[in-house]
Length: 310
Length: 94
Image (cartoon, rainbow over all chains, first blue to last red; front, side, top):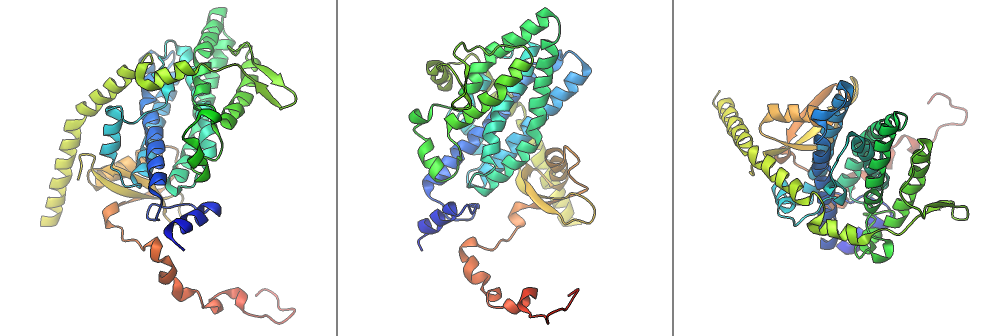
C-alpha cells in the first residue's frame, strides 16, 4: 500500500491520524489553517469580554467572567499546542494572526456595548461554538479531536452563565428586558453567520468532509443551533429578530430568513466594527510581554547552569 | 529555541491509585514554570492529584511507519492470551 492508500484507509475506517503519521500536504495545510483560526478565535474572543470585567454588576458576575476568560485562554492554548504538532511553531501562528494572514471568527469583531452583551455572547456565541465543537470531537486528526473533547467539557458552563445573565435581565424591569432584547437583536445574525457560508457556496468544505476533518456541513450545524436556540428565546419572552423565522412541521425544523452575506464578507475582509482594534490590542499585549518572556528565558537558563554545576 | 519557551508534555494523575495520563502540552521556561502552567492550564476544575511535566525534546518515540515490524514479535504468540487455553467443561472460577 502506498502512503496515500494507507492514509485513505485510516480515514475510511475512522482511525485517527496522529502527528507522526504520513498525511497529504493539503490535509496538513487545511488543519493548520482551521486549527490556528480556531485558536486565534479563542484568544481574540477574550477581548470583547475583557471589556466588561471592571464593570461587572456584582462580585459574583465578575469572578465568573474572569473564570470564563481564563477558560478561553486555556482553550486557545490547547488548540495552539495541537496545531503545533503539525510542524509549525507557535511564533509563526501568532505572526500570521498579527499580520492578517490568518483569520479568526468574525463574531469577535462586533463590540460588546452593554452588560446584556455578556449574556448574549455566552448564550449565542458560545452556544454556536458548542454545536460546532461537539461535532469536531470526532474529527480525524487525533490531537484536534482530543483538544475538542477537553474544550466541550468546559464550554457548557460558558453557555449556561450567558443564558443566566439574559434570563435575569429578561425577568427584570422593562428597561432590563429591553437590554436583553437589544443584545439578542445585535448578536443573533452574527451568531448564525459563525457557521460560515451556505454549503453550496463554501469552496473549502468539500475536501474537509472527505477527510473527515469536518463531519457535518455548515448548513446542518447552523440549523441545529437555530432549532435549539429559538425555544430558549421564547421561554424568556424574547423575540428572534427574523420576521421569516417559523416552524416547519414537515422538516421538523425552523425555516429562517436570508443571511446578509455582504456583511459577513465585509467583516471577514477586515472592515467590521472592531477588526483593527482587536489586532492592535493583541500586538500591544504581545509586545508588552516581551521582556517577561526574555527574563523568564534568562532565569530558566541560569537555573539550568546552576543545576549542572552542582 | 524561540521566545515562547520549550514545549513540555503534561501527564496528570486524576486520583490516587491511577496512572498518570498524557493530557497535552504547553510552553514554559524551565520546569517550575512548566508545572505551574500545567496546573493553570489543565487542572482548573480539580482534574488531578499529581502532575508530571516532561520536556518534549526528551521523549523518544517509536515510529508509526515501522509499527508493523516493530510490534511484529507479539503477533504470533497467541498463547499469551488467556482465551487460548481450553478449559474442561464445568470448570469454574478460572
